[in-house]
Image 1 (cartoon, rainbow, N blue to C red):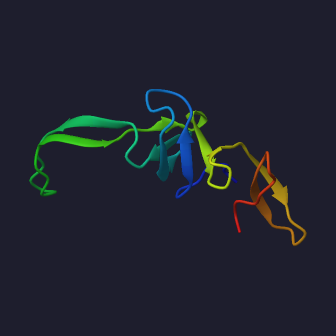
Image 2: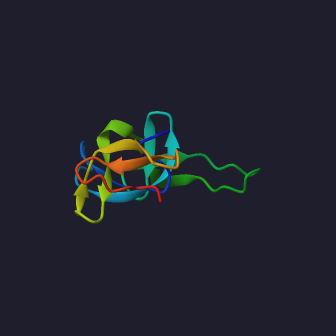
Length: 104
């Protein structure tokens, strides 16, 4: 079970985008793609088969998973994530400082 998943709201804690918040659009191994954060410009060739024009395309680049932290909207800051087993046997993610359950 991963600590950070697609759809989570995260806070970037290191790098040129430090302090920015966003939603995870994709998780790829040790990297995550955060919506509208770590934007790069890609120079692409036109591809007539895919009906894709050439030019400069702006898109998100990957951020290492260690450089993001799950954002707790209740406390208003990024917090560490732990795991806890509930009485019914389900394993859920919890915020470490408060013990608040993330997965309902």
